Image (cartoon, rainbow, N blue to C red; front, side, top):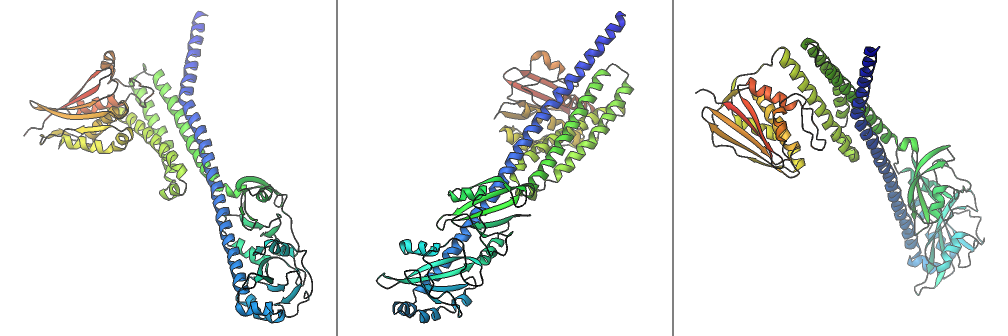
Length: 549
């Protein structure tokens, strides 16, 4: 009974330890993934909204310029000397005749009527006009121009004569040379022209632009291509804001399509018209949702990798006292299982091409961070592979003459991004000439990449690394000194043991690097030692015999 209780307690402790390791490994990954997901979602949402706001602003600017051009055309017509003389003489039919070619020369002008200062029509470019003699003082266009006798662009109205279309009027007062108002020229523009202007604006999939007048009524809308009656949009959320002179973006319910739409709105202030850019939410955020899907997939794979790593590391720790053959087989299985998902991450990250990141710069930092994390994961996998291969079969080492300072210089180049990121100053005291050593260039470079990486990671911000050489009889010693926090003296003998490490403030690492470095150095006939003092930094000394002449 006591034995069973003891075994049950031991199993409980193992389960609790397993759960703790899983939580320690997975929790940071999950938190980072969730934070990044919502941050990227917010950034991409803001980018999509900003793009629609830019389209609305540019469209409002373009519409303003075209209305200015219409006013300029009307002003040019009314300031012709002959035209003004005929109006001043009361020859309205003659004055209308001088304008008869204007609708031909300017296709967006449907017709032009001549009105006296009281609002009564006396001339029309339409030959068979049935509005001569009618008074339009009740019309908005008359009230607008007569308020200060300045050019005016009207609100939407229904035509009084066939064809009974809806349109707007660009109204210009006719003045004598001394400024006396002689009459009014009203150029009628049909909404079809305005609709053509709206269709010229590219919004994106299923998106469109529409215009509203001073009272929130539709001037042009692709859902109403033929307007024979006035459509009131003043109760729409975006149009309500336009009528208050506001500019902005939002997600509003679209009653025409029974869906939410991303909307940007901008007033054409001088004319009191409005521009609305609308696109279904589903289409507007399609790129954002695709990017979020990829990010979610990547973090899911990373979380799965972390789970596997925690699981297999726990298995290793439980089996440390079992026979060597079983341990080696387990490690080989780890390498095999971890490589596949790491390659999946590398494949997914490769989809973030420079062109894609240029288009969505807010993703660039996340893509770089994910790529670096995966590179470290692959590096850990390679370390595990080297350990297994080294214990089972022995690594193959070339025996070639190697220029030691050149190998160090190559390692420095490889570590340059990390060095630059931490602001570390490098002093490489290369001797004028050193005899070669016998070794394997790639393995030697891995030794110094690892040692320099340690010197960078455990250094203080904007610290320094000094690399120097010393000839000693038939050998050469390479010293790599950093200005980090140093290592406690009681831990120095443990630094080359597998999985042992001093963790300064959670710096990354697995505790396998120095173990592999020592293995490589000794297999090439060298030795490595370490000297360190707390608060003063750490120095690694790597010694190799020089090649025989």
